[in-house]
Length: 59
Image (cartoon, rainbow, N blue to C red):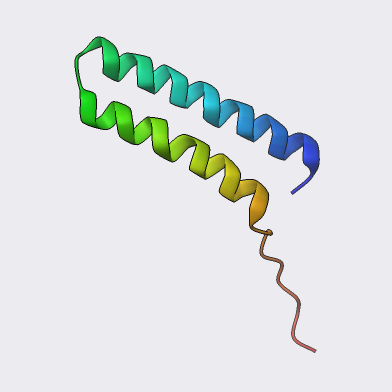
């Protein structure tokens, strides 16, 4: 995945996670709030660490 796309996707994931975190906090849900706080950074780090799967045609 190209660097600008990966960067934009990382920013979008973190912004959505922040919005979800504050929404869950505003309605008083503690469990999902903690899950969002832990899983969102994990998803971003995993996207940067693990390589993209490429498929080659059988020869």
